[in-house]
Length: 452
Image (cartoon, rainbow, N blue to C red):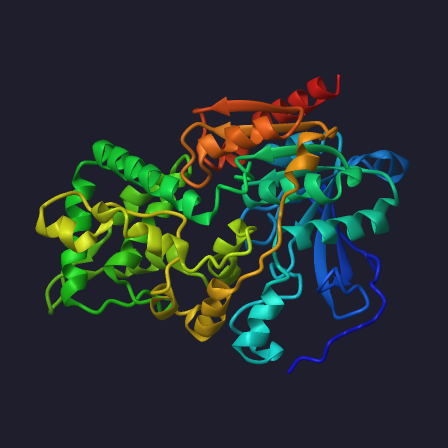
């Protein structure tokens, strides 16, 4: 079992600086408590990368305010920049940007099938991962902020799950915030909107998205039906070791949440079958591309912690997406084929059968089950404090976001004092990337208008 570190939490330590075209990058490492309620206990290490415009050096660099970017997920490391691009290009006009690998991701102390056994058995692993939600990420940010800039506040840009973290930040440590910018990440904060309510709104969105895709590419409906029939009779394994079943195939619908996702899905399906001596089989190109979409090898925490992301009422999540799916029988792929209907694809959902089909999750099966059974999840948001908020907040809400319910986001915007919103159907969930500089510029202007 891993030996716990209980040293005094460390500052950024030795900083390594490198250059890219137009950028100056610096690596930081911070030791923070695993459990912020027990600061003298075990420490874990966090990694963050500072990004500054190359021409801003010396005193000019030191005067720049900080913007910390919180990645979507959960369980995804921060962006790895190569030159100035999109939203980062706009941010670097006036900020030092900190790209944080949230706990368990990227170059921070990893949490995956290879490292979690160092914690002990499934019970110890589940207890460890119970400290990896948004409230802990907020406390991490506050320790990092104080070590970098003392009492000065900074600006947070939260993408998707990063926006959930930003709202938790407003709830638990608003004194650390100069402004909050949220891109497709206003979570449901009403205590009555539990994880089941989240998925009851999600399945109808998934249906709309896939039917719109079939309207754009009518031939794809026949290809998906053929794939479901094929998988009923053939064992197919993707290049990462994941078994492709009909429900796993349906998860390719996650592509439909991005601006170019429908086109990417179409091109993926184009390569579905190749002729072989044993008859039609899945082509290697399809198997490789499908594995890239479905694999959880790089982001296991996404599957382990997605539903706990919404848990704040003390109840177990109990595989909510799987339970609620039973209320939407149109998503039964086999029945759709039998009735010659379009096979509906799914999106941002996690199911217990994934612990068998997905290669990177099989060793973590019992750990995932214990997290699904876990009760006593604490509150992530303080609605009374949010109603008194004084921090400028600007949020872009995507009109028919596959991943985050628009009605829930609008209700949250009304519940947080002073939020300025931009509701648009110009972008899908990846708007901060697709719209880049323009989206961030709009958010900054909205936040400054609120400040007055």
